[in-house]
Structures are given as C-alpha cells and as structure tokens.
Length: 64
Image (cartoon, rainbow, N blue to C red; front, side):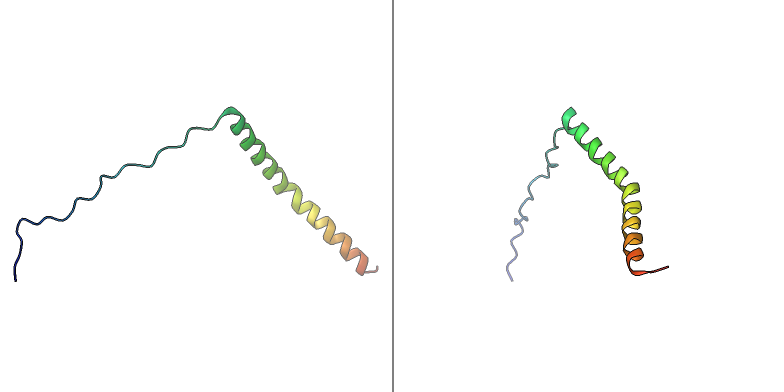
C-alpha cells in the first residue's frame, strides 16, 4: 500500500472567543432592578393571595 509521507492533516482554523456583548446601559440596569424587585415582592405576596382565594372557595362549599 502506498503511504504519502509528506501528507499532513489539514490545519484547524484558529479558535477565537465569541465577541462580548456591551455592558448594560443605566436604563437597562434600572429596568432589571425593577423586574427583580417586582418578582421578589410577588414571591411573598402571591402565596398569601393564593391562600385567600382557596379559603374563599372552601368557604363556599363548607358550611359551619
């Protein structure tokens, strides 16, 4: 079998890291802070509201 001793595998292209996104603007930072704040508030308020609705529905069906 013939072997070409001068053969070399093709070179892989050099790796370059992906381009970085620019940092957030002040308006974008404020929007993110407001969204996080609203989610934290809902984290504590929503279970209370959900429990109130469940108790109201249970009160409709259960007679004391």
